[in-house]
Image 1 (cartoon, rainbow, N blue to C red):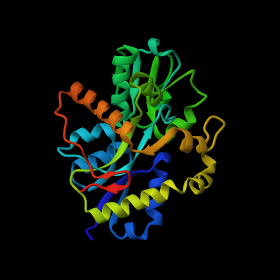
Image 2 (tube, rainbow, N blue to C red):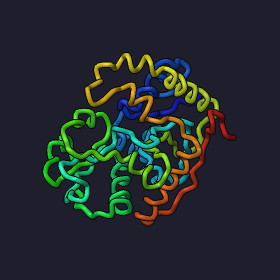
Image 3 (spheres, rainbow, N blue to C red):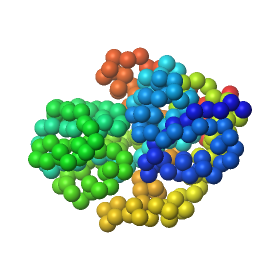
Image 4 (cartoon, one colour):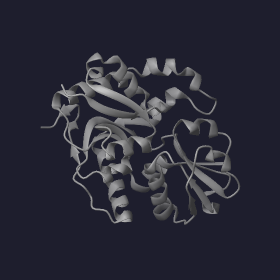
Length: 269
């Protein structure tokens, strides 16, 4: 079978995928795995350095014919915990927002909510590593991933973007999906889906292995079982496509045909 280059984010939310990949001898025989942060995963896929990647949802629009290659995603139904705006002041008093450099999806999500839900127009700023230390007074920041854990309890106002999206639209949110620019081999898809399923069924072991992550404000078991939602079901697809349509409108982009190669763990011919 053809070998595929696959990139994945090494965040807590993607640990079940990585765990499943490590347990699958069949998958290890047909992938070369690279760990990157979200924006890098997307860049590698778009530039042709990888064949399949867990990419931020917003980057799906960069592909001419995106193929979603798994029935699993990184999503939430309401709160997600690790994609938040942290602030010293209420949202309508925020004047400047620093945008996390690691994921364009969270940046676009915040900008949509700022414009349409909160109806505010803060000044936006790009970021670099360590930008979290600049949150003070009327300067807030969108922070994603594992770095959010140490920020809980330090700021008076925390706005969970997954929760606000659901309040605004009534839909769940997809932060990242397994995407390829082309149709993948069906036998490979079966092996890949099986490995992902193994990871999803291994949450007890993963939670035990990562127990040192727990803090008084962040409980890993709650994160995996209450906040992250991995099934790319019909409602999540609806939420994903609404989000992508909003970005396409913002950026005056054409909306591509999205091909779903797997539905309910079944390969689509």
